[in-house]
Image: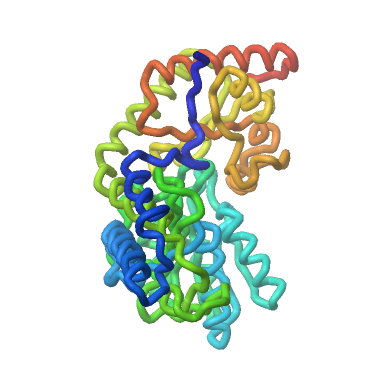
Length: 391
């Protein structure tokens, strides 16, 4: 049997057996519409309420009614940006975000610009960190929202979220963070970190696809962006609740929170071992992102003189799955907007791959992958020899 190794967990993860077992009754036993008043509906709503409590506990929200279920991280990001902007337009029309955000945030901001809002896209340093002095400089009297992601999905850099949130509140500005890659990687406490809005996705943490959540602190004004029934999600988000998905998401976030510390230790050991073996086997590469303040699950590596797409395809033929950037932009041949913002030259950025680990990866798997990378890099450099030592 061909050996297959999956190293694209930042794109999506498999659904765990515990999560699958939690979901199964919702397909053929407790299958009522959660908005219905009869017993079938009440049973379905009880499952939704239980999942809402689990998300609340995982991020230490004050109340369960601050959790709104969505179709995923993209909808949650869109809703946070557009909903807050529309609800608070009377206070101002200026928003601050960073150049390395997920496109779910960037494209929502671009939409607001078409509507007459102004957006400041903060630069980052060579490690992917937002400069707090730059943030302070960008704040205006009409700034209504700051949105900075917690963990970057391409290079894994962890932002100084608590400090950014404090700055926002010092100036009476709302703060949103895209925490899709952060759950299970760092401790999220929305009360301690003073977060007003937070986006989460299920399928990054061994839950099902097509479900996520937006945390909205009580008292924050936000308009809906989806219309239909008036009763779902307390009148804020129309659409029949995805009960199986919500049930699975609730279980997934409970498990992820419970195992956060031990899983991070495993991921750090795997990541460190991978880098050690790579340094022994391959010349002329660089690791992108912050050297210390980073996710243990994500490793972004540039190989000078070759294209990341070529590496990806040859590794895929060997049964190894990696990516060249985020999954949402992986079909684009343009250099990563994240690496570009970090000041990495195009010729280096184009030779980058993203390796995102799961806790099921063994040292034997790592040895196999690094050997294949060594073979692939040597083969590609032989075909197109460039002075790799210039890196």
